[in-house]
Amino acid sequence: MNTRGLLEAILFVAEEPVAAPELAQVLEVPVAQVVDELTAWARDLEQRHAGFVLREIAGGWRLYSNPGAAAYLERFAASPGASRLSQAALETLAVVAYRQPVSRGQVSEIRGVDCERTMRTLERYGLIAEVGIAPGPGSPILYGSTELFLEKLGLNRLSDLPPLAEHVPPADVVEALERPFRPEASSSESTN
Image (cartoon, rainbow, N blue to C red):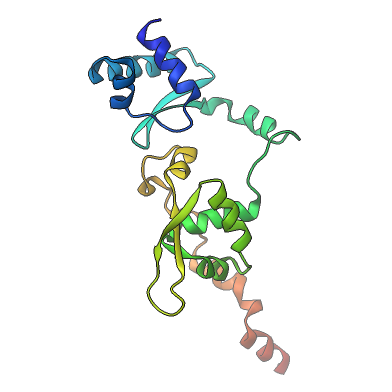
């Protein structure tokens, strides 16, 4: 079997990105040869519009589904047999990703609901992990995202996350939305 075939077999079964030096060691070939072969393979997949792509991500190489198939994969993911994260889990994961290191209490405060169960689920899936202990009363455990989180999102580093500001409405819109729910607004409205 040639080098590319062996790389295909290894990356097909790999559960996380595999670094080129590790692949070179397993195949007993120079790292440069592995990198050249992976780069050529990635280019070939792109040129023939294959159903999957090869990316260098999170310190290694990994196969991913082609972004062009996203609409069909979404349909498949919506099928009864496919599993995915709940909306609550996605929201909790977003809070952890953007505010890390963060405690369970802080996540619950931001979301406005108890997030302990959801955070345990995310921890079990390997998307978040304990990263430290906060100083102060109670010494709460701090959480952060994992390499698996980066891998699943196709990111090399946390700084590749889209800026949060792009998803937050302007201050005047937030003000208008919040005004009816403020205690002072309802009391002043009742006196008029």
